[in-house]
Length: 135
Image 1: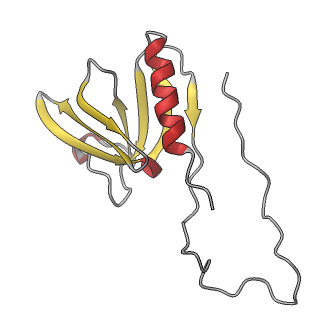
Image 2: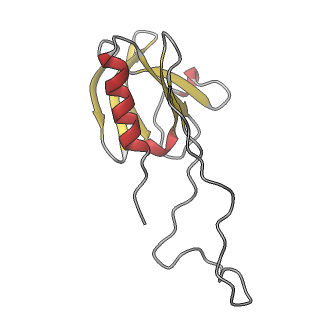
């Protein structure tokens, strides 16, 4: 099983947005279990964050999460956003970027708890691929 492509896409799109002199914004699921953002600033379970180099300090992006220091109402806060909680990354100036689908839960190597379909037929893929065009 391959790892999630989301953290790689977030890093690539961040670099692309900054290289084009635009402001990278992320839309975050503020209700994700591991998210650490100032909750007073979230709306409808989501928060939009400016992650431009001039707006944050110590931005770290790895395959697990984004972390940085940001100011809200003049008060510094340490933010921690798991990659799975990033719902979108886009340029403030023109909206170009990417919206991510919700990631399915990750199962251990044995697979989900149920035994799968019965009757000896191989499981069929559910749904269709979900690729998005980035313009």
